[in-house]
Length: 442
Image (cartoon, rainbow, N blue to C red):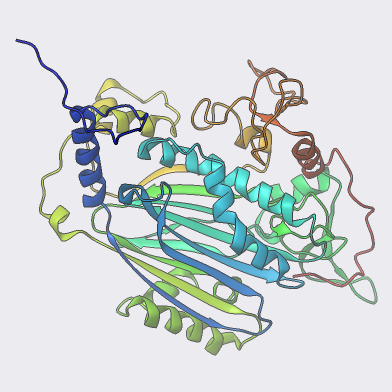
């Protein structure tokens, strides 16, 4: 007995290939499965302005493939500007587009999620590079969140924060890039040619937080700040988690909140409130304790559980998802075959899938990180311009790392992005240093 696939009709005069019925059915199943695990989102925003340099991005209804509902996701961003609002506005208007441009359009959802961490790194650097052709003195922190179903991916530079409360626990999804918070960042900047210290006052005393000179910026990572130095890098800390079907609450706030409140206090003071009222309560709690000394902004996102999922028994994962998770974890000596069996189960808990805060592009854009060949061979891995075979410069061009890395291995950069990479690593000085007696930036 023979079988045949049924095809959809092709319009007269069209040259499109027919689509087998099996493919259409598979698309329908995938679409229904994807839609079933997409929780409802409720969003609230509140801000009190002092300088008017905090900007937000709220876009709950995005589609990476226009007209395909199963490709929907949500994006939220907080941009705390300093020395003007130019960097914050530019980043708000361009960052998401740069992220999507850095990911091939034809990826399935699993590969799209796997590609997001590296695409966010490329997009942050491209946004910074493009903005610095337009202005010198303005800078901004960035905390950018993409929610796709139960998956949350956060990329951040600066000292705004994103925290998650789920199933009674608090998860920090961003990192503070203040010099006072990281000796590793102090060492990186000084080794790249920066001068890190406190403000000198009359008599030789040093006061205030650690800052980078010239400029006096207390942040080691941001977008913009060309007047401070290229060693203030835009390479973000990235973390990706998968929620359980119980959902959770995100708080995304500028340092006007976190300079006063701990994450525990922020959640406790707003736990019974809907998102809009919760954001207002958090801001007012911070301002009440410290006064309005800085722009103070809060975004609250409630990720509400799908009640249907709560009553459904857990089923085995498809093998593809096990492969996806393995891309992000390093095996340890304690791994065993029984662990592999457990990994294919679908535990209804918060899972931390991916995390990296390294400041060096050669590691963050490596072809093994996290998915091989995600970047096309003759496309710049940062700005996405097409390269001739003789034009591309490998990110390993000056690598001294042991192993199998070679200068002719990709991904590749264009000349402009290679110069940006060298400046960020202190191999191309962008300006002379100056005294710590200068005015401070942040």
